[in-house]
Image (tube, rainbow, N blue to C red; front, side, top):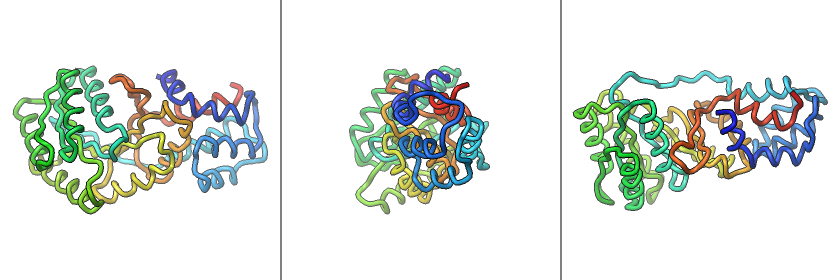
Length: 289
């Protein structure tokens, strides 16, 4: 798993190596500051981190500084409910559809049955893409035509999953409507209808953030969190960006658990996020062991 993470962070670690070409036992505070900025950690956060460090920084000091950003208290809304219902949130292009397929494949590998709900009825392409993934993975899907009420899809998906004794339900949602007010209203209604279909659903509302967007994705996350309350995050496309350091800014700003990170386009390219492994994968490029 650690090797998958290192591969996913390849472009980020390359920018770090450009700042610190050779591994050392200690680096200057200025070099530590520069490598964090190059990896797209936000400027304000970098300043607050380096202010607490001595003029020469060793691995332990760097590790303690970075791992502290993940030390917030969070409630992971795991549930024994069956079906366990997850609603996938995020803007178009963030990788929602692919991530849904990855989650479904992961649950299948764990011996769980899965049903999908094509709740992004705003785009015909979204319904088609999710249906193709459902076909590839041999998973049932509830869908309707473009423009139909997505809340009806939510209700029908959960009701069908209950009747068929399905373990996991994953529901797609629209990423963008004509105005943010429309989007907020639609998402809030979908959450209400999910709870009517099954008390307590959706059990997790997961936000998909595009890793290539870096720190600019934080404002997106805040907006969605204000709309419906996000339970956790999946960060996609980290393998395609040098902005992996933005994960630190995301953790610091949002104080939400990062569940998984996407490491490629295939259904298996999803790994559980572990803060200690993430920090070590970056520091391994800088410090001698």
